[in-house]
Image 1 (tube, rainbow, N blue to C red):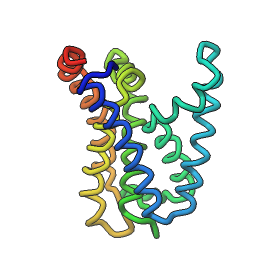
Image 2 (cartoon, rainbow, N blue to C red):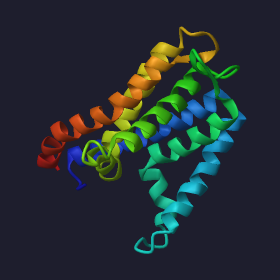
Image 3 (cartoon, rainbow, N blue to C red):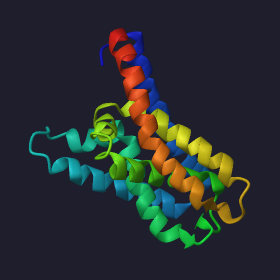
Length: 189
């Protein structure tokens, strides 16, 4: 990205997504979620540190660029302590529905990208690695959609049909948006 208005806008998207995650975690007052978020930073930093081609500061700085990966690892850790699986769907008893929707959206997004990238010529995974602002937009859209469904459910429940639908739709949405937006954005930067 260069110092054009579009480049600054894309950087602002990354910063706003990160700030929204922090705000949601702090507002939830869920110590387990906050601890999982902090632990996932170190897990992601260790993953980046394993790459011999990265510089010394990359493990410290790259998690901020890939905030969705950071949140995805935190969602897996948090779900291990908070998720209840039943025949009706996923439930997060005694948890805030907003936080549950945020973590469930990350689970469905990451599961969808991992599960369906091979079928879609690896294009969702390439967008995941190469277009952080695009993934953050899709991630936020998934979060708002799941929050719309979960706020009406008891125990912050997420029906299987909604979770499965979001898991299938999210990589398709990533692929469609990257095909549609990449030429436009690259022309403006």
